[in-house]
Image (tube, rainbow, N blue to C red; front, top):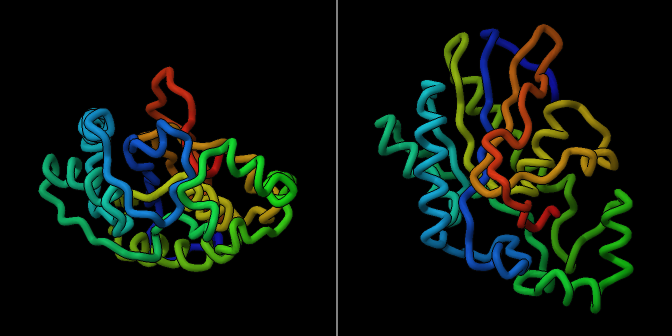
Length: 217
């Protein structure tokens, strides 16, 4: 999955959505459709100005509101349309969704610990991380294949989905994906195309002095 064909020198910018109320409350969002806060919209506008300077050629986004609203800020600056795809949604986490970090630890502590050890765990009875990569990575690669040589694709998604997609595109073993630190709201990572596939050029870029608040932390 880490190979690439066609044109060379393409870039993939994986951009996490802005802040939501559930991020602030440290509630596990998963695939629950939560909107951006006013702060989240402001974060998206700031980041969009920086990303627009990369002169992207295309924008893909998860179809959840927090991602489409973030993508819309870049679209308004660049004039590029946003293509939404449910394959880029955050991990479905069953009964964990809506619970705070503390509630998850209290009720599902052993499951949480196993996940943090890198074991394949269906958090809350939901998706495995490898299943998230199975649906998200092909969407990203398909978008990248449509780019011209040297082109840039911006993918607006979620912390956990971005982590698993990066791991898959780099060819890393799933148990090591945790080594990729979480993304702060509205920060991004950049993959560049080389002779032997995709390489991680930047990670959690655009970070403000704020903590990582997300399902993958």
